[in-house]
Length: 293
Ligand SMILES: Nc1nc2c(ncn2[C@@H]2O[C@H](COP(=O)(O)OP(=O)(O)OP(=O)(O)O)[C@@H](O)[C@H]2O)c(=O)[nH]1
Ligand SMILES: [Mg+2]
Ligand SMILES: [Zn+2]
Image (cartoon, rainbow, N blue to C red; front, side, top):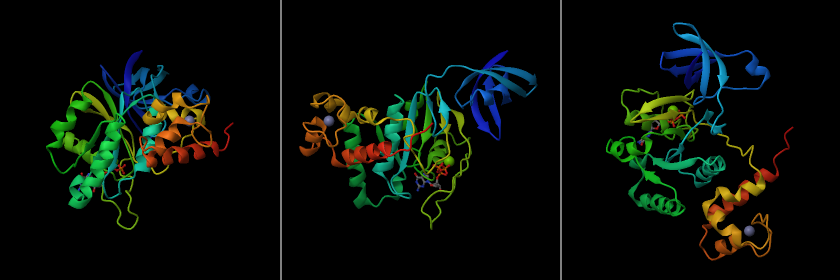
């Protein structure tokens, strides 16, 4: 039995990298009955069938996994946002942050296409950068058209498995092409009429970048909190996490409850109102989620 790691999933095949080489593998038949879906990033045991094909026999236990994008055993998620085209959306950024925080994975924030931002709007993005930095997040305002960013962000990938996540068209593949021009990843213009990307990247793939592995992923348009409970939402916001122990009631959801330290912090300006509004919005979404059986 050989061992390796899935580096790509495409058209029903899992591409397993091992010291013997890369093998296109199918999952074992019993996986379907057992509801085991191998993911990119998984460590697996596989049977070599011929010089470049095999069968995955066992998926090893994961340290973590994301559903969107589908990937396992990662160290950090680079949440890629565009400054413009599509316009920067703090709401979408917060959605990604909550999803990543809920899995206890380190997020890193990239805001691309700064070269397209009119000079009078640069300050607005810098304000957001300052707000998120204050929360403890690393935030880079950059451009894939300016190669000097390579030296600035390359060190973040050293010895780590990172994932690029973000809406379609924000520039995930472009940024990876900047980091390694030999990749030639496909990128595409934003459709002008729809203002969104065309989902150019169609599969998840781990690529060797610098001294680490980075996954390019397809963008997507829906992002739901399908396995997050209302009482676990607060800890996904660093500023709520630090205030909530001062709430009067245990299990305070920082919504209608009296003597809530979080609401006091919003009122006195130490928690940004827009972040708290996003919290309330996500809380509502989680509460109104249909039960799943
Ligand atoms: N001016 C400018 N254009 C950029 C930048 N980054 C990406 N683009 C353009 O934005 C478009 C979309 O970029 P992609 O890299 O394909 O976006 P993606 O996030 O990989 O999209 P999906 O694969 O669909 O998820 C392309 O036309 C890129 O040339 C940037 O920093 N500046
Ligand atoms: Mg892409
Ligand atoms: Zn509270």
